[in-house]
Length: 431
Ligand code: SF4
Ligand code: SF4
Image 1 (cartoon, rainbow, N blue to C red):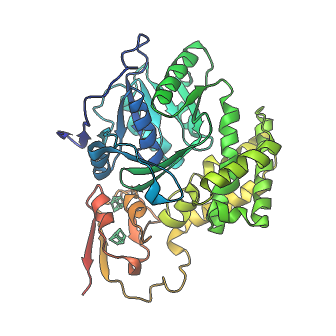
Image 2: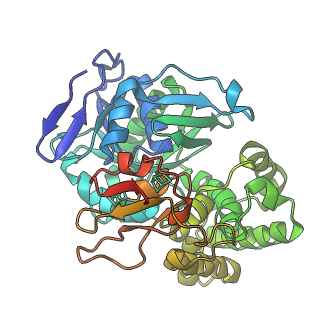
Image 3: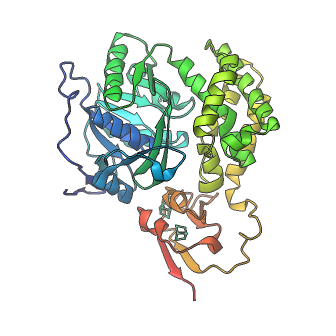
């Protein structure tokens, strides 16, 4: 497989033997799709769309990850409690690119970056948009649609939510799971015939690719129902530093979750979205505990492991913001949001338990070049020893650059140096 280089961009074409049944269908509605953000969920959805017949390009800034997603391809393991018995699909070689520049106009651009990165991702994805390009967000929570609408016509914006989980255990290896009969709910800001027609074809592509999907007019009810689970356990697990299942065993935690859920439902009702508290408590929450209670939720991972910006303003923070606008009191969500923001603002000053403190002399010298670091956070994400974090202050160039918060934990594995797209890190043995 050849690698094509464009100035400032690296592209990994992937195989050309895809059977684009939907690209050739009589409606001609979906041919080219770009997925912005090839994290665990973005790359898994990209693979589904490709297997459903679309011509998909994953836009991923990390060249090493982009290269692996192209060759050997994305390996998707079906989640089981026993990692050794996890069944895998054959690797799906993806077409990837490190930059949207030069890809040309798309039929659909799917945004799968984290909420705090949506505005920057939209700005870098603008070359992909022509008059007939659709945008789709399946990101967590609420608020991303408003950001897309700052630059795109509302008529071309679709949004929805997912009934699936995905964790990227190592670059280009995703462990995932699908829940329920419908895994992808799609809807539109403007609910007219053109949106319905495109949404139904897109749902058929997802379904053909292995993720049953549905286009529905009442999409807000699904989005907010999904958000209830995140509101209940995502930020709060990060605060109490427990997995979802562990936290759910504590009655005080459950009472906290119930308070946040009641506030969220009150805000949804003020927006005209009907949610059922009883169904959530008796069916949705127990099911979520069963299927994903063994993991730290994504925001807990951001707060504890990656020390990265969280999606708080798209979840509990969105409830706080909308509650203020609508005159609905949200004291518990507001308190939780404020606590998360305090932690985000002070990652570099977090307490480190003794035994992991700086008592032991570091065995490796970690050098991070302020000149080259762009603050992408890949090194933070891929360091399994939580050695690195992003600085609270911006550098002269305006970036939150990487720094070694716990150098004594470094094992010299070089993962950080390998994944850094700017070659900004060097690791050397001390002494
Ligand atoms: S060398 Fe390995 S352990 Fe050390 S900072 Fe880099 S990724 Fe972390
Ligand atoms: S050191 Fe490299 S990988 Fe880490 S934040 Fe900076 S640019 Fe990104």
